Image 1 (cartoon, rainbow, N blue to C red):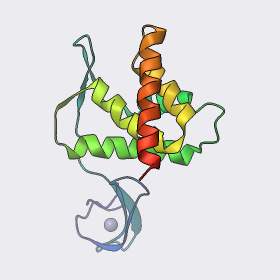
Image 2: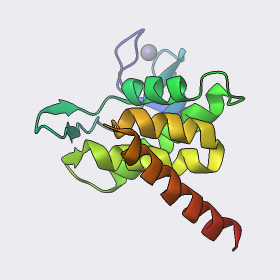
Image 3: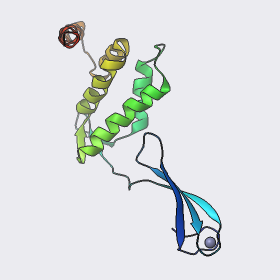
Image 4: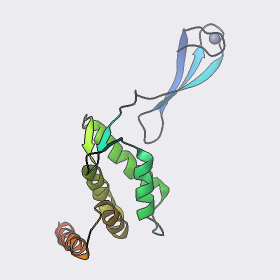
Length: 157
Ligand SMILES: [Zn+2]
């Protein structure tokens, strides 16, 4: 790291700590030449993942968009911003962890739904109805039936 005060490239790391819920690290450094201290914020080189939409269009994965979508689904439910952040981080980590360059949007949606299931069923249904764009009431009822079945299965474990 180059000292912002004198430009020396020799420094000593005094303290390293991870930034909550991210892969970033904050480091407190001391310049070996001028002895001034400064902080660096480091994170892995950004991986760009393309989301492939149902009509074949592609757009870069944007965690803000997913955040907004979940936030909308969670409106007036008692779900904290922290929980939403956690879901977005987990989904993002899952996707990055799979080392793919492209991922179909429905898989991203399914990952979000999987997490919402454990958080709040109303938010789950809201997100599902927007995400899967239920064209008609039948498709929606089918989803509800599936949910009910899964719910029984899960609560029976
Ligand atoms: Zn210096």
